[in-house]
Image (cartoon, rainbow, N blue to C red; front, side):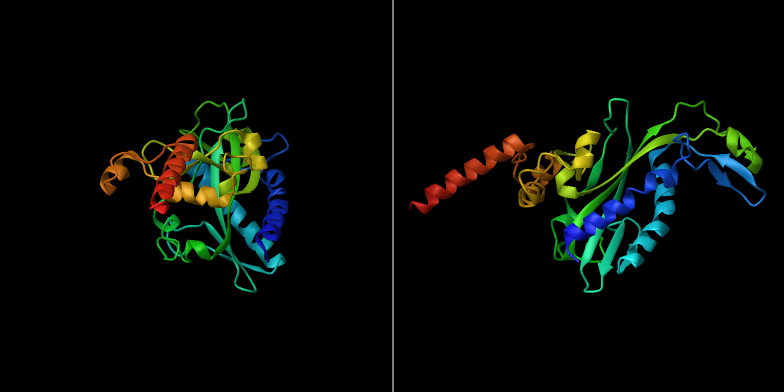
Length: 269
């Protein structure tokens, strides 16, 4: 299976997830946690908690999707390994899918989206560094985006409900938006946050859905070169280069122009 076919099939699958996770009122179907005595404990809208629960709900669906399409779904062998999901076809072709979630505002912009490390496995693509397979072995690296709005509710974390009271518990999130795009098409030219080693994602929902980040027209090879050679301030000092070579696409172009000029000087000698 080629990467375009896999992405098309996954897009079609993911398009069915919104009604799966929402009530008729566009609220999240999850109300809380239940114990053996049928007590229901409500949850917070903490993004880590929410995203993990969504993943737990979707993984069986994605496993069924894999089986219908002659694929095998593999989960990472260790926590914090990349990617969240590995799909393998009968010919051994690998497809990486990473869950990424965030909440969005009324202006249809997400709070923030990070797309994984630009260090480690991203640079050392021939090795198994926090991965079960080398990065280069994957046919594509896709993001399964899960976006939602945070509901406006009074905190009810101190309350315990009975199983017959589900109807009065307000969901903490609502109005899901799902998308599937190659990582490079929705990446920005800035790190995800602060001085971290994470690739930042664009924040406009319309562009996320369409895959219209700044690298989309430049190509995956430019994305790879940009982020493979990107240094934050601390890493630049540690590497002995002083300051980073560039910090956005405009200064990246200036850096490439300078390198080209130097190569020309060398070639004339």
